[in-house]
Structure formats: C-alpha cells, structure tokens
Length: 88
Image (cartoon, rainbow, N blue to C red; front, side):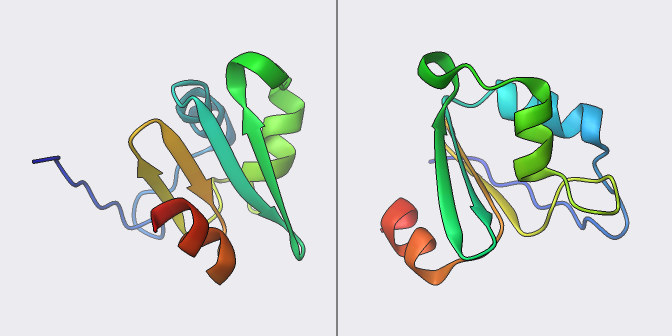
C-alpha cells in the first residue's frame, strides 16, 4: 500500500526553488505546455533548472496545479490524454 499526501496549493504554495527540487527527485517529469505534452527523463535528458522552471512553474512563481507524484513520475498540469497514458 502506498502513502498518499494531498497539499492544497492555495494554502501551501510550493515556490520555484522547491518545485525544481521536487522535480529532481523524480525520474520522469510529464508536463503540459499549451496543448502539448512534454515528457522528460531527468537522467537522460538532463534538463536545466530553467527548462524545468519553464515547464512546472506558473506565472505566480509557484508549482503549477494540478501536480501529481505517482511513484517516480511527476505529472504537472492537466490533459485528459496525458492522465490516461500516465495513470492508466
């Protein structure tokens, strides 16, 4: 059984520095960028902090919502097809 933690981003925003640290703990980051879905393998693709910031941090300077951590995959933003592909 896996542990589940839910954080209300309005009450506990995650700033850009913490968001990048979170992304670096994942093996894969999957994020929406407009209508596109970007998938990065952290070790293989070696994204810079600025590349990660552009994908996972919103205009507020905080981690975009919704964000889901599923195992070693971090999913950022909403796209129904992306959710179906990543979460089954």
